[in-house]
Image 1: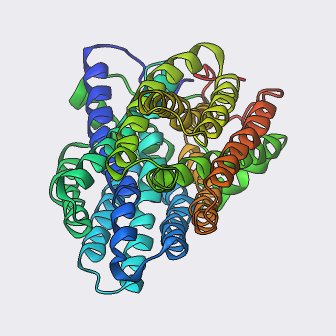
Image 2 (image 1 turned 180 degrees about the vertical axis):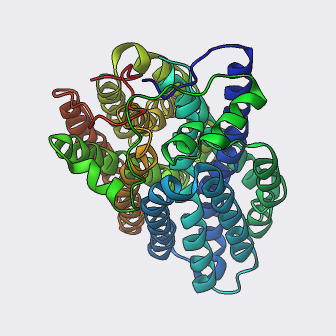
Length: 441
């Protein structure tokens, strides 16, 4: 049976809007915190704040993404254990408090620790939020809903660009990133409902019925007997049973290249463009424009994925990203450069989001968060490598090599995400497994 709400009635729509709206808000803050480092980095390098240089800046970026790796790998399993809501709240609190550590840092070591801690929260939030909204998504609209959620991430990037331009001070920028602790955390704690599919998978039917009654919806119907509650490691092992291991590994490899692209370009785009001859204001402006393109791409990509399948659309998107990123290595008139940056953003961020949407659609209720979390987590190895690689290439003074390396990552992901569409594997039959997939290969 579908893990979406059984009735698309007024109550179900109201509940879905509430879930997506609150998750959109916290993911906006996630995007702000993620992009703020890349937005203030050109100024930090110019003023040599905390003794930073391009090589050290790449290391700091990798510390953050290493924290995201740990957060993503653990959050899916923890979310399938304690619930989506608690994981979202704790993750938001962690990256907000970590921004305060960065803002008050008196040395690069303390600043690096703050970025690592922020990474733990940032990595933990996104898989849980994606899982929650996909479980409340109307049938046949899963990828569109995930894409809509991910527009918040790009909106956060836009806010980060404006914050960097407005404040002109990296410490003030990081203090602004503490705001989610006082807005996002209280709102999520009070209003965000737990996943109905999670409650049922854990045998907490009374809570699921109470939630359904509160919003006037029907709880999801279930087939057969409920499986015994899986331990925290059994859900991971389930990703490799039968022929699923091939699909799992392919998605992990595609996610590696996708997140190498996302985090490498996000951190180094302003600095690479500045080194390519553009002024500082234009370089930060590219962060805003690439995220505007990302918002459009999430909505367009989500709709096309629901219609044509995730692997097919993601492969096209990764190919277009590779072309766009490589084109940026060529010095062009400013209006044309902004156009290319916008189009690159349109494909760049949504390609990775469609991987998440497809994994969520192909997973069962009792291990969906684990599947999304581990896909994100294994991809974080690329997220760790991307910022480091960009720093090393920029330190050599070769901007062309940087753009070429990131373009190659797009082609890498194109190959592996295409392979996931060649063989469609049905997950093991468990109650709540989606029979009507939102994104098929």
